[in-house]
Image 1 (spheres, rainbow, N blue to C red):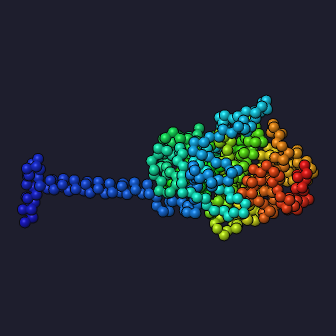
Image 2 (image 1 turned 180 degrees about the vertical axis):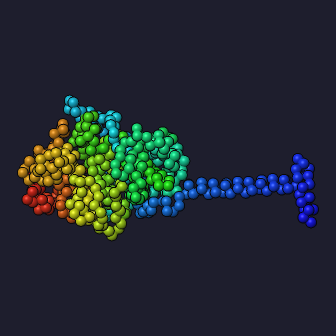
Length: 485
């Protein structure tokens, strides 16, 4: 029987005169190849779907309570009369725009062309409309209506919709390698402990800033989630807009709008001062925008966002000298009912609130203190902490208190300010700053009140407020002395 079986397999067939056993072997091989091809197609398809639909563990746990705020073109009733706003296609053409900068060589006023970049860690003005929901005094902080939107040109226009989140765009690592010329050194616009920021150009021609987080023992993952949670959904014209993200393997990248006119530190102390000095009007415009953004983060959204690293290098400036707060890598969220948290002390020396530095006690009033230091920095042109100065002048806040206590407050004004402010404008700004840096955290005003103080044409502090300030700063500071000056 075995011999007949073997003889049957050895018979020739009509197919190329192949023997039966050879034909069976060929058919088996073809079947195996087809099976492998089908399996490969299935795996490839599944991998492609996974790439475009992140696993739950990949997607940052963004709070659903943080809303994307936009405003309808006709919804002007939601705005306070004193608030800045953008309408569709509106550009900044104020009559006094030529008062924002003075040229260093001759002191004459000139309008900046915004071309000086000189190593800026910078990001561009947002194309989206902002809703400035700073609540009126005495009204509760609530989310403003957002049932209507304005469609404005976006840096993401023309790009395929790949994001599975309800905001932003998901970029592949390859997309960002192409945009930054493989993360070349020539495209580096900023770097620090968090990582490196590159200038990039998307396939649609839009210029963006790509923040590549360093993978230091999970720190990149932590900072990535913090920034996405803090500003992934929110929109405000004085906040740098987060456009999208990239998650591949251990790579964590964030894509921001590109703001090309430097930052406040560079305009006050660094590279941008070669193009001119910020006038008093220019400085106050930047500070008012910063105050409005902080008021929005603290009072208009839930959970509130505490930035935790407000400083001049994190205040970017666009071509129209609008402020844009950046770098939310240290931000903390405070939910409803949370008055504060105790956390590890992080921030920049000179800007950190005393109660936070000593005990880790953190809430939105910590940002208020940092803003007060920032305002003093803009008024004086001095850095918050400067070891090159004599001992009494090393700490900016202490020096200001000493000068005001000695009735020499007029001497603290930055000598590079060509056109001096009026006495009332100077007093208003100085006393607002001193209220913000009050060592008693309870005495610091909320940022919505700071906005009103900076925008007011009258002396901003009510008589009871001056009394509290005077009691807080004695013996080093008598707030009434500013009022009499």
